[in-house]
Length: 431
Image (cartoon, rainbow, N blue to C red; front, top):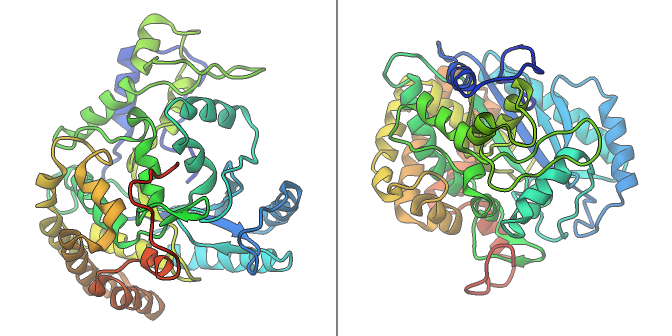
């Protein structure tokens, strides 16, 4: 599901007004109907298996990625600014279709990388190597300039982080467990539980940070207008449309030379006042790809808060659990009841800039309330997965994760912390 696929075809060069953009965004953000499809985007760090702290020469990665690009994969293969590898599945008609397609692609990718002495590593942040941007393109040059204004977290996000993004249909127009309004609200409350349960990034730049999910903490540190969600209690379409219009413009593209990086220019102001130049539909579509809230409505829902997971099959668990809790009506109702009380703890601030999400990143399942919600949700998912046709492999992966971590109040980050010195109190994430 590459960037920009949430918009319908249109004349990208055509100039647009504020009213036209409002109607466009309002019309495309939630495409409702029966939940039928699922997808996943997997980001991976690439290391030498026996020397994971070793920075890899760009030319070595370029050669490896060129070879991967020649493979007959069903997923889209892209490279993130710091050299992280991303596989984005096609929308699948079932959980198991998605698992089968991505598993085959991962086998092919791992086999090719192994011939070059490289391997995929599932961690939410690179624990050892410094942030180093390998891709020098106008988009990433502009993004770095913009994010640097808020501090060093932006470079860590771009170059040292990796996630699992689960993509699900928006749901029915009508209310109910599978209605788009309920699923939108569930995604932001359950999202904190997913951050906690799958936290797998307690280190950055060679030292512990005091966070279970440093990746989530880094995202929280970047510009709130770009990384934050709209107000949760408002009607979803209207709230997202206002958020898009009021969000800061990251860049204004140019046919040649560096792109403009305005300071304090919202899309709404650009449309009203003209900005560096009049905005086109293509500019609006591009602006949508530069917003990074924890849940992004792109016609479907893109849940972006889960750390990359360890092991060959670690990625299966968040994909399966999240799909079950959204697409099985009984599990969706159980999950909603389990996470609904968390709304009071979140308070009025939207995710991830509220106490609930900050505690999820910092404490993981050592937080009793988040741990209790995780146990309930995982049990509901395990009951639902056979109804969704999950294979023994998937059921085993989820059961093993639950027994190893969830019921014990642990997460993958704790395995890392068991083998290193305690974090230094008071240290900021990116210091």
